[in-house]
Length: 285
Image 1 (cartoon, one colour):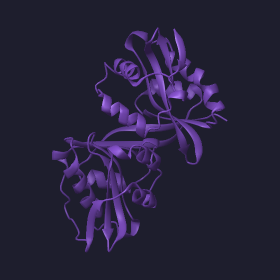
Image 2 (cartoon, helix red, strand yellow; image 1 turned 135 degrees about the vertical axis):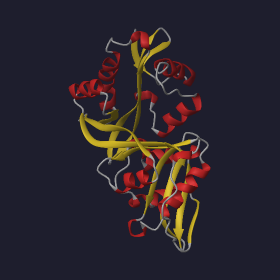
Image 3 (tube, rainbow, N blue to C red; image 1 turned 120 degrees about the vertical axis):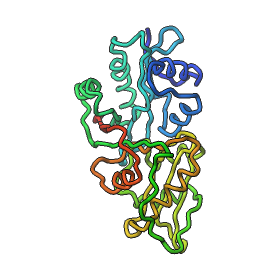
Image 4 (cartoon, rainbow, N blue to C red; image 1 turned 90 degrees about the vertical axis):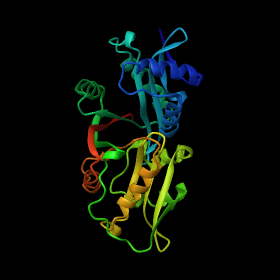
């Protein structure tokens, strides 16, 4: 068995290892979903590593790289081990193998997310030097079960229309918290070909926006400028999102748990809490 970079590994080989590692999980991915995920999360094959048995991938860590809070960061885009090779500590071995390469590339921190009920993984990450930085709430609901707003205030001259990613970037101050790695503006810009952006305008002034992936049901960002809240703008945006979804559900992951406005809005529409995650970081300096 050999651990080495994925720099020269083709997508078919990578996807084969990925699908085998998650074959016994409830959620399954097709090739287009994995390609989209890797693009949005900034997958860097040169700084991603796997354990190989011959030419076959048996365990891997796929790293995204970029800036997070202005700091050069590596992000755990996906870690997996084929069932027959579990229990050998391969994930830890791959991670430790990668550290010198990450530091040499100027990476100053490592970032990941983990389900809060995955106590074993959290314990391992703590032993490796990771610390929780934020708590996230994740929501999901069938579109048929999403409630109509009890009271939709009329907002004069409101119009909602498709916008370019530049508008989304300009509207980032509307957010109450810094989005997670996979929902941030850099992720949106990387994966913009697979995303839809809507803007809400009053008298040609942007007052809200949403970004979503109609193919996967992922509502990446939705926000309204603070002074224009409680006027039904978020509900109008959400309604337009739901009309365009190709899935029968919508999911909103990694809402900062300390935030109150977005969870309250989602729950008012009967979009239920699905699970909770920790964001964890490790200093590589």
